[in-house]
Image (cartoon, rainbow, N blue to C red; front, top):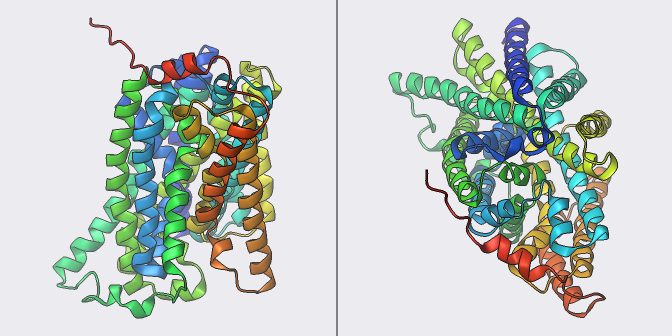
Length: 491
């Protein structure tokens, strides 16, 4: 693909993002607009926005790369990413919306009646958000360097600047419009090129699986302890989804709990449709771009495959299509994360004002940009999977037990969150050190969720039953609020 086509694709997505964000500015007038879009977002619109922010670099580029490298074992990622929303539907979506909180730390303060619990939750939400933004910036660096020839840091910096401008303009109201648009852009950007490829192969009478060669086990790496790996990964993805701050904040924008449940149900359908396409790219890549696995550049499969199949203008046009979708993925996920972090930072440091929200936006974008510039691009889906493990080990116990177990105490919640953070964070750091030194990383460090998540739950329960302090006085009233369906007003 020529650099000019790459520039055009990136410029088109940027212009559309800023124009839609500017439209949001016109109707964002109150503090509630900035934080939760005044709780008026309808299910289909909100589901599209959730799909836009949730389908990150790991989904758009990383899934195809994992399928290219690992074959069927990589399917645990899209299955886990989607099934996590089933957990949200069953256990979290409606009660969380009924809590009336703006952020996860707000929920912790209201449920536990504890300022220290709120502060610990805020620190973890910010840490999770920053860790999740970094892979998006790595993905942007990869995309920009491949499609334009510019240094990778330009892509990372461009994403942060564009997202901060969108968030500063209209907060949650503005970002809702942007993310809903970007979900459908990403879906089309993946679907159109791969359908062209399949139609061409069909017209030529060529098997798109290479007569089954794409599923040959010889292409897959030999992984020991695969059962443990898959179980641990599933726990991380299922439980980690429950604690993602940029996903949870979207449920606060629904009018009521019923709308939150309906939103989650629609999201399940949208994700199921989306993940068909990166899986197809990965299968086709095993036939037409197997060298990417050897080169360690498998995440580029989606970007390079159209030009590998089609020559000339059509190849450039289809490559521009996936480039635009990839850039939209980085923008939409980063915008969701930054708007959720800005809300937390504003409430903790700047008294929750609109000006504080804007200051929080700049801080939420600057730190992960610095981290991205200081680190190298990793396998995108794998690095995001570690963020899910960390989230599952910290925020998931707070939410599940806070919603469904009346005996949870502030001491128990804090002890559990700190235990999960230390165990999972320690495993991530230890695994990284071993990897850099060239030593083999044990599977229990590479995928720690199977033991860090149960440990966090156990400590939370144990400290709640035997630790200092008791059940907050307002627990019964708060839980009744969470689990009592709203009255539907007839019109």
